[in-house]
Length: 319
Image 1 (cartoon, rainbow, N blue to C red):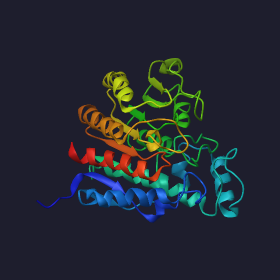
Image 2 (cartoon, helix red, strand yellow):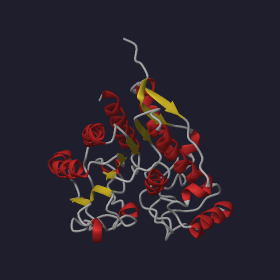
Image 3 (tube, rainbow, N blue to C red):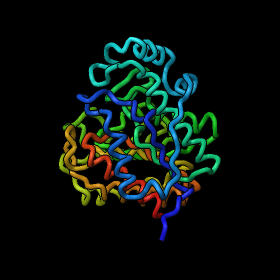
Image 4 (cartoon, rainbow, N blue to C red):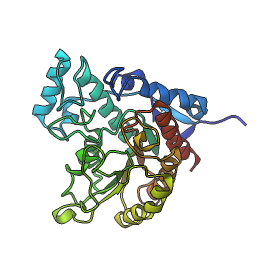
């Protein structure tokens, strides 16, 4: 039987997204997008989704989350291509501003398509840049598309109650601390214990501040954690999300938590990504009118990210 396009599921691909990379010798290199697209096609998933093209955004949209001074700094270093945008992980390069604007713009285009019911579930491979702070880059992340998405959902679409779920090996500190005192952003963050991995944050005792106390769930995992341990801890996340009843779900599904990543110490398989996607799609269907936006995040073993991200897309199609 011929495979048919699934209008509920959209995937963004295109060379404009692939330009967000820091060179062949950097972990966040130029081959990540191509590895995903090749596997998407090999599995025939490209014929079962709507493929959409990247979009650019304007400075005003980025400044919903980031400070004007920081955005101006990125623009200046984008012209010169010199120096680092942080303390040494995130180098500037000519055109880095436009590349980062494309990541954010693609996420905002995806939000718009979801809100107007052009698609229900969306995956963007080069996105989920969860370390960037409001006023600085960090950890390969220039602009925090997750934060811009949260602000846009609220300011442009009137959606306040949002759940952000992050299974990247690294703690999503740029999102967590920007919203640590926000009672309407519910965070679930599975990550390698900060005692063994950058950025060194995300203790289980960090559950939100002030009126947001109890709206954040950090689940630090030991180095070498497997699918079995992830599935063992998942009911905590599920109970938390059922209590939250979010109106929209953002899912940062970094593949650097899969066994064999060169810069982390986790041992998931792509099954963890498939499992989380299955559970989150059901929660989205229950509380959020099915609305879920999945962002690729980290992942520096090309086969791992191709397999992990395709597991996410395949599960979105199958539900």
